[in-house]
Amino acid sequence: MADFLYLTVQARRSERYGRALREDGEIYYTFYGDGSFLGRSAVDVNTKRALLCRLVALTDQASLSGWDQQAHSQLVGIGRQLFTLAVPDHVRDRAFDPRDPLPIALDVQDHDIPWELLHDGEAFLAQRHAFGRKVIGPAQNPRTGRHAVKVVVVGDPTGDLDGARDESQAVEARCRSVLNHLTEAYEIASEVVLLQGDEATKDAVLLDLLMDPAEPIDIFHFAGHAHSDPRNPDHSGLTLADSDLRAFEARSIGSTPLVFVNGCRAAQPADSSITFGAVSGIASEFVTGGAQGYIAPLWPVSDQVARNFAETFYDLVIGGETIGGALLATKRALDDPDALAYVFFGDVGERLPIFSPQLTTGPYVNDLGIHRIIETEREFHALELLAVNDLPWVLWDAEDILAWTSRIPIDQLRRGVVARSLLEYVQEFGRKIKAGEKRFVCILNASTLQSYLAHRGWGRWQALATELDKYLALSNVTLILAFPHKSEIEEIELVSKSAEIPPSPLESVYVFNKQTRFEQSHLTYNLFEDYNPEMISHYWERFGDLIRQSLTVYHGVDEAAILSTAGSATINAETRTMLHALAKEAFGDG
Image (cartoon, rainbow, N blue to C red; front, side):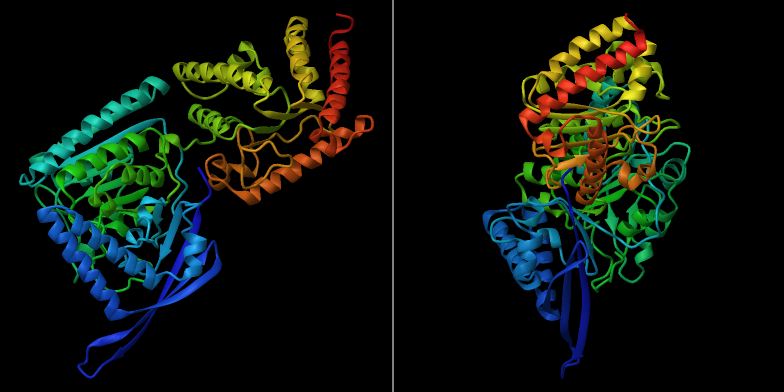
């Protein structure tokens, strides 16, 4: 996904009391973007309270009579006033630029303000930016990829909400449908559990499902009554058939599900004071307990919107979209103010665990990781920089693909899916390179390539030589042969939307595919999803160093030569000569 902005909003309250002993004062907001100071504002406590009271009254009325044009205009007006009062001009330009609406990881100390509902005069921020609110909690172990998807849907436990019952049935059907497509594509196991009415007891939901670590849940959807207890936030919770699942019990879940609660004001803090980083009530408790995230509305939304929102969202997120991206797309798709009510507590860039590739015991990613790499290269398709020890994928034949996929520790059916994906990749990206749609620079390891030729034999060399000649004749291709001091070189892959060399960090991404070094960190492993400009620059420097070392055996060329047509032709001509020399050493005179 695109880069995101980590927006921190600190809140400091200055209190004083008037003659009527009414609480007065100001709240000072300090904004930081990715750690850098952006600006500061001050909002009168009573003005803030008045606007929030108007918002509550407006949404309460709309939940009874629906949204008409006047009510919608009032919602826009409140959003504009909050935006004008709370957000300084410089912050508007840096954080909320409509020309570059980045996803926003929102770390705020005042969760009372509906930041997503702020309106910049043209649109609500929630219709421009993907938001994910951060909450304070203990550090979680990195979530790893999974090979199955389990969805639990709880609907109308109290038996008095026909809309919630209809919604839960629709969500179950939609999830089953989308998961069937996922199963067909990747042979992924899936399960959807639906509990309604008397079935949705506390024992069944909490003990048998949420607290069972042997059967981890990916999605927990609840449609029913949710409530807040201002005097005892720990007792806020979800109403089940026989009792409440209370906030403090959400800390004890054994799974890491994405929690979606369609309940009245289920995202509201349990009190009306500044919470300084911790959201009171069930939202923070689920996230603190290990949930991947928590989604809920700020006000009671209509049954139809609640159902449509959930169905559209699950289509996207089970299809592989990020949680933040799926919420943004859903809000844009549904033309109803109620769709703006939904807020998300969690990481804006996360996907369901099934789309979070994990490292295996060997130097290979799983099948979904390979799929994500290929999808990324479809988006970042103008330039590819590779350093490999054998051959780039576009030069693999069927035997190479089958040998490589046989070493991935997954079942045979899924290996077949990987093999088909790679065969399609070879054909698709080979066509793009030969058509001049893609700039391709590749460093090949002479030592390991010679071993590969000796292993595969003369017939493979003949076929490979023919294919290599096609690439070496292209002006948009540069193949460089490396003669390292040790047997292997570091494998590096950079792809970019621009054909510029060196690559622009603003348009490029580092693709992790076969590394087993420090990239095992869960933070860097998914760099093909989470854009990181510092890492792009870092890997270009390492790639550039490898180019300079490799070109020392070439005659009269340097790093700048790969930028020119003539220089590339010179390099490719010498590479062709050296490749044939390698083959001669491997096979003698044939």
